[in-house]
Image (tube, rainbow, N blue to C red):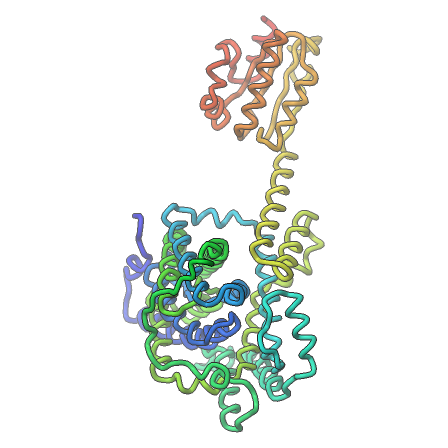
Length: 542
């Protein structure tokens, strides 16, 4: 079926026990999502409510319409760098436009069944930009972690380092203490969580945020809070508002929107695959992309930011017992209730505590062990992962992915072409060819004849026999248009020199390509044989 959300198939054999587990899991994930949603929004240069509204609307839509039973959607750390750059360069109205456009792109990707193509992105590229994004998230939080007096953090790497260096003497000891304390609580809670009974489901990020908020409010500590910087968060429902489009810059939003769409697709489908491995299920990638597209198309009209599947919240959902999309819906409703009834309490949340939470998220987001293990891999893999990482950090995520894919593409071509080979069949294997070398030559080709391996056939052209040339293609698994063109040129050269060309073992895809290209129709019936032995026998009789 073209559009078939997974929720429609999730309630077969559903009972009250599963319902209870889904509700409890949804409540837990809602609590986990609250500090993360606010922290991601603030780090992206937006107000905290943008993150919460996104978690509510996009989270609910992704669960209702998605192709995974347990995936939780919402604002993600991977978007921080891209969103912050768009906000700084083009402004918030154009960010909303780019988000809506990315939703359209994601929807089209799902409609045209392109979900599986995302899996073709090499793991080296994914690790490189993921670690790069994690590094940039950590860098962006140094300001609030140390309480530095910087009016506005630049989006570019070197400018950020320069701004941090100039403000190094403005450290706020109170903010630093809150941040370090929050980080210590998060790490310590993780270590003792399994021994806390019913409290084991309560995440350390929430405990750290609650205690930091309580201490800040009780002692009126001199540290920036959500209230002092943003005036708190509104205790009302998000309202619909048409996106204000700056037509002068709208044309420049296509590339940022494509970046958001590609990043969202990668993140959501990677998250869905991780979820599949944990619950032994299989998601529908194209349905997931359509759900992500609809969510990103809708949320900007309510002041939201880009959304995707989130690994931390999805894993929390699974570990808490969630097994149907109902848990994701409950998570969205939980956040909605928090906004309606507990929003005034958020004004005392210290930004240093949220910075510590993001530092922790960034550290866990990166696959740092892969850098330690780099020496075990070949040079092309090392170059790809390091170049993507450095380009993500120093230049731009889009450039990094493009360069990474280019490296991976070149490496792939080289590897596949090196696996293809051409061997001269001699009398030791085919006794019929004894004393025939130079008059009748037979070549056996292995692998693929594509644009990266056509040199195999070009070498044959340099040493053509005087009477008959046999080409055995039985072990060729693939021929592309460039390969077929080279075979055609070889046949033409043989015709000019009055050499009989015999093709042997033409089967499957190579046969279809020869037929589609018209080469088969130009080949005489006595020049096509099922195997090399019969071809050699015919050549000797020639």
